[in-house]
Image (cartoon, rainbow, N blue to C red; front, top):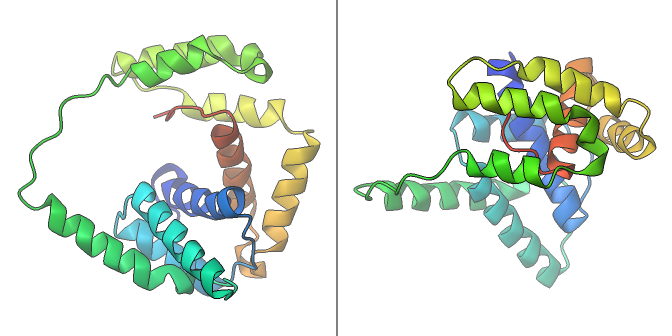
Length: 194
């Protein structure tokens, strides 16, 4: 498997694994097969929000029936049905009203978490470049963010747990890096950096 554009595939996969952990407290060993299931969802461009809704439904059914969830394949049928319904609804649908794309970045800057205050200028410059259609330096900001939290005990523990629950062939530095970055972006509700 090759890494997609700027790690978008790993980001998608890791965010879904993190969602299952944060939202439902479900953690299990991620095998190569689980990774492939998640990767196929990314390849099909199944919206992350739709997958999360499907995960929620399967978890709810699992809890009612007291059947534990131990692999991502257990979610596949629900995701497939949800995606099929999504595609059917989109056929002939009207175009959505335009959304102010800058509102999220401005709201983020206005309520910048204290832990990120040292990066305010970097975030502001990147968001300004993005608003003007210029290529941003997201990689530089990502590195600064990772460096800022390199010694964070909670992040280090979560990363170690995540890697220990991956099949050995998946325990690569780029996966660990993407996990750390996505954890921080999610924790602080950072808007998209691209």
